[in-house]
Image (cartoon, rainbow, N blue to C red; front, side, top):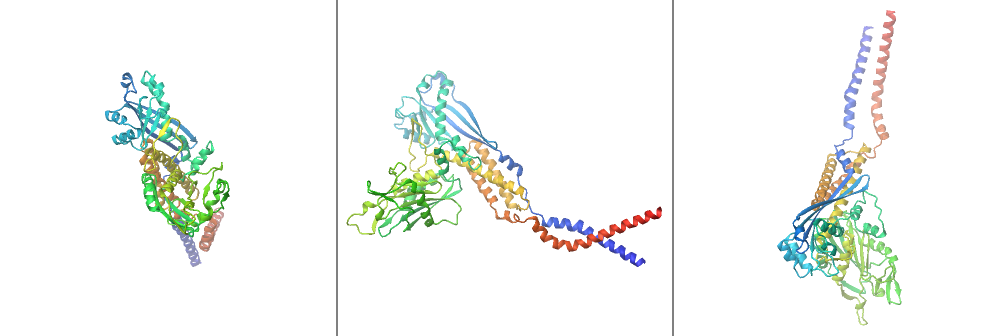
Length: 562
């Protein structure tokens, strides 16, 4: 009897020991070894970025030439004024524009430069004297009698960041400096709208974050024409020869790209990286049949049918699978002898002067007619050397539009200097950099906020250390980009915004985020129940039996006492 009691007691202790080991050691060990690893993320800083408060600061310097201010007015300069404009885009996004305007008189060397025969020479001389930083403007106020500008021109915009502003008649009547600046302020604002950032451009750059409602069809086309901001772009030039039996084409695309395209791309290197390639496609036909016009003795492509031209040709172009950058396609189509000449006509049935068209966020196509080479004694195939200057002039204009360089006509009374060899003025580059910086910040904040929300909602996703590092890098770069924009350092703001968008997209599209994304709870039960149920049932039954015997003993003791 004593032996049975000892065995029963031993069994109870064994059951209690196993249960204690399972509860104290096994369960925490299993919990720790099967938990999802989630590195720390700067969630509070990401929430702060979700409420985007952007301030764009621009420095403007107004220089009065001799004869534009009276001696009494000259005593109050130099002078600095600051103007701010607040715009609430939506409940989570607000914009502030800050203009710091410094007024001073021209130096002796600047007066000598303003005495040059032409405005272009004056612009170059002023640029040599002092180069203005990115995002800034220098406005030189010149007398009404100055011969630098034609009589009907009141504002001359140079190739750099310099403006020549002729004194308006109402400015001459100003007796005090305050009255002069009051009359001058509308002209300065008009110059800023042309050469610096505008509210319409900045709002369009926020399209990834804010629903944009343009007021007219023209603004819709402008916002949808250009490619989205990207760290790099691939530019492909393709020569389409539908009938090699009719003509043998020769084009110096390498030399033409180096002469006409590369200067623009070099100047735009702060915005993105570019690569150029070319190809020649034989027997590449258009997707539509042109219609012959008897009155013009030529084949015509209507504007309505241009949309159907791209798809059949695009299948022949190929793609660069090694790169994820957007591709800008520029196609030169040379019609065969049986469909020459071929012209593009607009909605008003008029010939398009460039004989070319562009497709938003895709590229451009130019039709190059060579029917003049088909004489009565011509021997096929005819050797044809393509005029690359004519072709590249069209492609360069299309490239500017597709990269987001604004080309709106200047206001009345404005004269804009030609862009020169680079195809891009300094102030045009600044304007593009403002838009790209804001667009990069908006895209990066949207990406990093979406990632934080996704990781918060789905607890099964593993957050590795490299993901946390990329997220922290993106947040830091975003904070620096916003701070540099506020300080007016446009070049650094663009650089940090590019780093932010690269880090945020690298974190968002990391493959490791999908490891446990589709691992629901029912699958966990299907795995763990066959493993733990055979072990847990005997332990649980033993604990129930021990508890039952303990209650039975208490009842017996209570009965004896009674």
